[in-house]
Each structure stands twice: as structure tokens, then as C-alpha cells.
Length: 483
Image: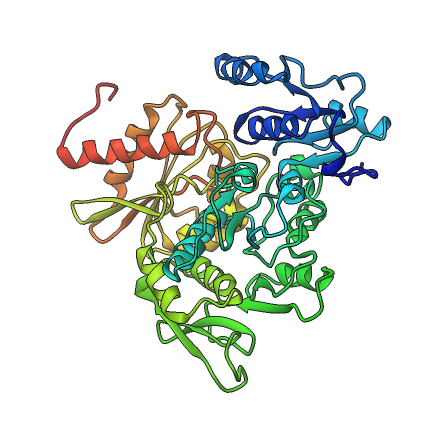
């Protein structure tokens, strides 16, 4: 199936029949933009709930047809599909489009094509984990340099709203998911970064190779820098495979001492050996490790990637330091909730896969680990092997907790395990109480589930909120009613 356009351009959309796949943060602005270009727009959406009906009520007065409860049938006469992220390439709608030779663009592709001649360049970030944090760090650094910028894209701010808005920007910090990149063949960023690669969303992409290839699209046509993770050779392989503009450079980031054309760490100082006059002999100090919040290893890597992209845009060293100092992480990302009886309680509910959980577990020495949820097809042997020596105990929750329990039995049989045979939301309070019982002063109780949350919670935010509430109850001595 092709995602490219067949002899179709945004200047040629007036009077065309365009179908938008999906509503939400991306679909609504896409439908409005297309209607503004004179297209005849139909929005299809599989679900038919209160939120979708409210969005339909906003669009229909504009002359946009909204078809709820049917996301599979290709509307008659469709000449272009613009899709929101998340719709699988194997969706019946797209299979019908392929049979009819109808091109498919993503909302990012549409935004890229709609940008004006004086549009700000994009500094783009993707990766299995750390995208949002890195983009927000990058925006903080750019802001500290006095540049007009915004953190946009998969972070929750529609690129279409930014491209079509009146606010002038100097540069954009853009988070892109593998879904968005799959449908954005025309994208050509100023500079791009792939933070890391680990198995994720394989049910959508079909294979690890396809997933990696979609991530690698972020490097295509880069003008100045392709930023990769020295510790993850697969990211460098994607740089090698990319077709970039003449003079574009490969820039690595590492938690160790950097070589030429790399950023890294020397004696707790973040340093740049890429954007200096003599990278063979010189290194520019950028910031201290203590300027990174929190200073966990994976977050330092995020900071280095953000710094590399900012430096590719000519940002001075002082702005890197000031931006990192000003940055405040989003909730539920290695967030310190409280200390109770000498034990630190850390909320990393955003660790929804094994790669993210491994990074989080590697940041602490003695851990009581709260884990479990929806595994999404993941296996846990490698994760448990890596973390086994750090584990004081484990509390398991969620629908697929048995998979983690079996891995613990194989690779960490001496670690105490509490298996909570419940998936209601009150299980979190019980998990925190059990973790407190296992922990000793100086330990860390880490809620890094390595799984998705939807078996027990609406999303990872609600799961993190439940953990934080349970910790606060523990600190106050309050016992929940469901004990």
C-alpha cells in the first residue's frame, strides 16, 4: 500500500472528495483545513460516543459530513484520504483505498504540505521512549535562546493548528510517532533524532523491521543533522540508510565520553564535540548533570539529544544550560511522589513497555518494583535479567502479571513476589501497602509497570494518579476503605 500522493497536491484540492479517517486532536483540524481549501470533506469514525457527537456538531455547520459508527467503508468518490494516527495500514478503509488507487496522507503530511514559504524549520524527534520529554526539553532550550518556538505534534498540539495559525515561529520542536511518520513521505526536517528503538506497536507495523523503517523516515531529507544514540546501533543504521541533503552530518549522543561529532558526559558535565570549531581537539561545556531533572541516565540521554538538535540550529551553550534548568518534566515520568519512613516512592506510570521500564529500573540501586498491566505481546525475561540484582521485592498487578511472575521465577527466584489477584482500580492502594511492607529505609518503591494501563485504568495518567494518591494515604496513615 502506498501512502504517497498520486499526482495530487494541496493546491489541487478544491472540489475534490476527501475522506478524513478519525476525529480527535488531529482529525478535527484536518477536516477544517481541507474544507477551507475547498474540498468536499467526509469524516469517518468507528466509534459513536458523546465526545464524537460533540465534535461532529462542530464540523457539520461547516458543510462537513461526519459518519459515526462506520470507519471501514470507503465513501463513494473519495479521491484522497487524510488519516489520523493509530489507524492500521491493514484497516478495511485503507485496503479499499489501495484497491481504488486512492492516496493516503497523514495529518503530518497534510501539515507539511500546507506550510508556507516562510514556514519555520522543524527539529523532529522520534523513538520508542522519551519523545515527549526530549521535545519539551528542546522547546525549553530554544525558548532560553530567545527563539519563538512551540512543542507540537504527537505531544498533543496539532501541527495543522500551528501551520495554519497566525502565530509566527522561528523554529518548531516536533514529536513524531511511528504512526505519523508512516504516512508522511514528504517530510524533510531541518534535523531529526531517533532516541532509541525497542519492540513496540508491532501489531500495527507488522514487524520490527517495518517499525524501525517508519522511525527512520524522520532522517529522510534532513538538512543539517541526523542525531542518533551511540548506545543503540540500530539508530545509527537508520542514519546510514537515509537519503539526506549534501553536508548533513551524523551526530551521536552518549552517556560516556564523546568522540568527534558526538555529545556526551565528562565528569558530570554535558559536553559537545560536534558543533565546535575543532571537534578533534575541542569540547564545549553545555550543562551539568545536576541541571537535568531528574538526572536519571535515560533522562540525561534525552537532554543530550535535545541539546544536539538545538545546537544544530545554532543555539549557544548558555541556552542549553538555562533551558535544561527551566525544564519541568510532565507528570508520571520518573516523578518523585514522596518519602515515607526513609523509602522513596517514584511514579513512572509512563513506562508502558519493557524498554521504558528497563531505563527506569536502571536509575535506582535497591528497588521494590510495582509492575503489570496489559503486556501488548511483550516478553519480560530480558528485563528481569537486567534488573534482578536491584530488586528487593516485586508487587504484581494487572491482567498479564503472570508473564512477569514467570520471568521472575526463571531469573530472580530469590526475590519476594506479591501477586495481587485483582484488576480493579483499588488494587493500586493494596500494591502500595504491600510494597511498603517489602521496602527498607534507603530503598525505592518504583511503579514502572512495563505494561499498558487499560485493563484497570483509562490511561497511564489515571494509573499514576492512583499510585500517587495511595502513597499520600500511606504517608498520612490513612487506610483506604477497600482494605
